[in-house]
Length: 440
Image (cartoon, rainbow, N blue to C red):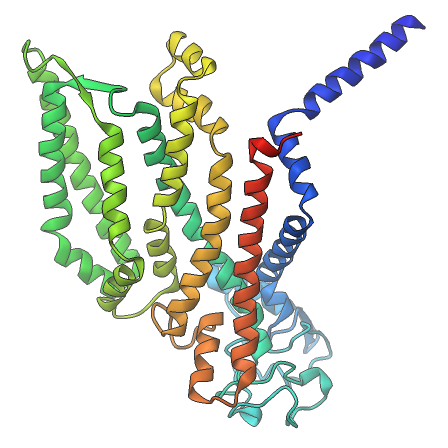
């Protein structure tokens, strides 16, 4: 009997100990903030709408039976987009609204964002009398000047907003964590290399940048104006040229470091170099940079806007990561990893970074809100998106041509406001939950 009691007490102690882990405390503190919890739930709903947009608003039905054959048009369109399937002959020039289906299961909103209802064009209000077959075909949020359904545009605009936030911040996180980790871990005296390697790295690094990006700027800008794949190919080629120059400099350094003077170790001010790089980036307005890049493009692309936002939004994450690594690098477990002979890269990315990413989550939450707001601003100005693409910003821009179309201003504007506010509240909730002064 006593043994069983001891086992239960031991299990209870172990459970309590595990409950006191850092992330358990953060989770418990986060749950106390009801505003942040509800914000997270709304984020889940927004993500669900973005993922299921094609099944919520689409002129194509989910399932249909035509001429005795069964089809799944939405799934079939995915295969066509991926290049692994073709549309059946029965779908060619098919009027999805009036097709003689034997059986059909339609989406809740039977319109696509690009689907033009010519009977209800020229700004139909949600409360205007609309020329539709039945209530099911009613435009519940009205239409724009081309007869496009606003509710369908709102749903598919959610997907665009989420993609912009997630893709751009994923790029920012990779770049920011990399540079921030190097600056915080090494500082100004943590990295040493021979004089030969130090100076040759600088010389051949500058030469590599000049030959890879300076002389090839015309080829890069021309590829950018043609298409995104061509642009990526040219960028990869420039990166290979830079790596070749940099690698040749390091090979030459291996030979020259045999000299006593050139082989002496010197401190590399990694922190100063990266900090100055961050200051240079911050001094360049993001909107001006995007305008400059888009100006040389023949055809706009929302994907390019995502990439540009990602490459211009990493500085905040780098600062957070640098600050955390400056605190972590002197702790005992880092010193133990170094004393065991682990490589610097393993120590940084396997031991130091996993315990320093809490503040990065906060930066990501605020960053997603900023990316969505920036993309909406660009779409509102007609920059970076094709005229036929429907986003919250482009829908909001449509209200400028007809001030009486209040629904084109209110619905997209509220969507942008709510989404940005939700991510900001989520960021504030994470900030409070990760504050060590609030742990109890």
